[in-house]
Image (tube, rainbow over all chains, first blue to last red; front, side, top):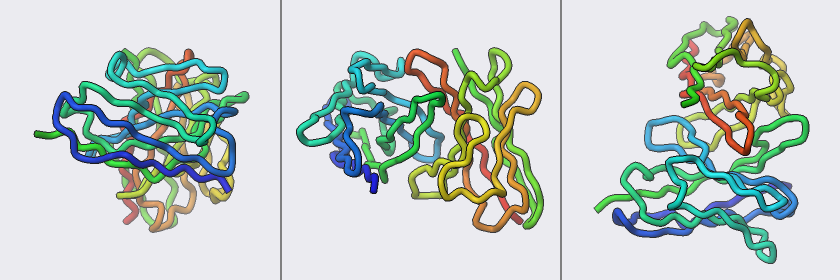
Length: 119
Length: 110
C-alpha cells in the first residue's frame, strides 16, 4: 500500500529555516516523480516543487532560490529545505507522487504538515 | 502569468447535475494540458478524482466524469450526493515540470 507521511512542520520566525520530510512506503521514491504542494490557510492549492526520478528539479517562482527539494534513497524519503522563510510561506505542505506517463497528475498525497512563519 | 480559472462557488440540489469548469487566461484548455481534478474536504488532504481529462481514479464513483467542453476542461457530477459537498480543484500541466492549479470551486449540495 502506498503511503506518504510528512513531518517537520512547526512555528518558525521570519528569516528562519525548516526542513520538511516525506517518508514513503509501498514504492521507491527514487523511481518516481515527486512533488510538494502547499495550501495557505483558507486558500487554494499551489504547486511548490518537483523532483523527477532522473534528477531534474523544478521550482515555483515564489520559492526559487530559497527552497531546495531533495531525496534520500536509503531512507526512501523526500525533503524540502526551506530557507529565508516569509509570512507568506505559511501553509500546509503536502507531498504527492506524480504520474507522468501519457498523463501528468498526482495519484497519492500525504496528510500534510503545517508550517507557520510568524514572530 | 498563467492563470487557471474556476468558478469560486456552485450550488447543486441533491440528485442534480452540476458541471464545474477549468479555463486558461491565455487560451483554450486541451487534452495536451492533461487536466486533472481533485476533491478536498476541510482539514483533509486532496483526493484525486479525474486525470488525463476523463479517466477516473481508482475507487471514484462513476457519477464523476471529466471532459473538454468548448475551450475548458470540465468536471460533471451526475446525481449529486450530500457528501459531494467539497472544494474541487483542477490542475493543468504546463510543461517543463510546471503545474498550475485553479483557484478551486466550493460546491454546496442543498
